[in-house]
Image (cartoon, rainbow, N blue to C red; front, side, top):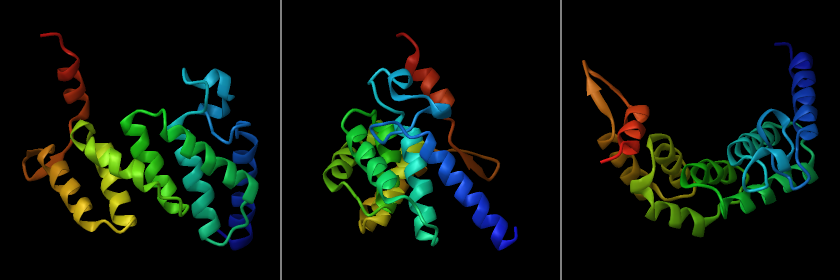
Length: 171
């Protein structure tokens, strides 16, 4: 893309993002307003994390990002950490690590729950540990992630659907 086109598209994207932000600073699926978005009465932890990553990375790349919108998104992410399931907390903590708002107590608490995380949550937690200066914890999580891999024909993958299906079966 030409620099002017890229700048224009980024500005349009940020404006669209701001227009979808809920009053509490969170974001919902497809721009859904908070009261319709989740049983908790707030925005989606996953969509809020994506929006936070987008705004933070745009700012770090030199684009002008609305400070009030970014601050409200950070505050919403911090609030969602208190009520979100472990998998969503992993993504929120990862996004917060880019904004310089690492919530170390919540990160430590989630690390204690590491054996309950699915592969995506483990990977995000490992990346966050590395980003926040905890390489030993990150390496431990990568080793745990490796134990959950399915290896065949020289390849590895994580069969999360099968694991969820097995855990949902009745005895």
